[in-house]
Image (cartoon, rainbow, N blue to C red; front, top):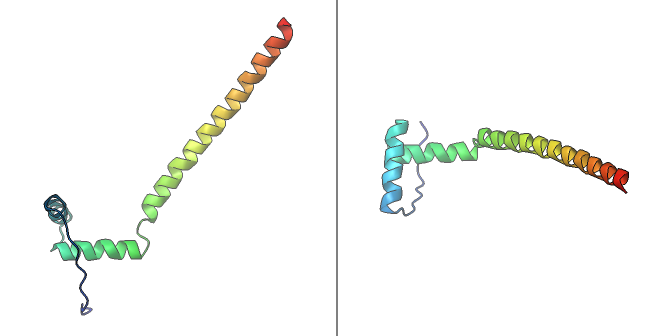
Length: 88
């Protein structure tokens, strides 16, 4: 096991601390330090890729829907223009 020689500290509000303690228990971590260390390791090793991929996937889906809407608006605009040409 790697010996830990550095310490990082930061302040939390009472609510933040209670939330962190609850998360620690829910995750089955031995301590807040273990939970924080694991979360930081996850960030350092690119652990947010899953979230990034999910966001990218949703954005791609939205982009596809916007493209379809754009095509529908263009088609409707052509129909309105051709209707106006006939009535003139």
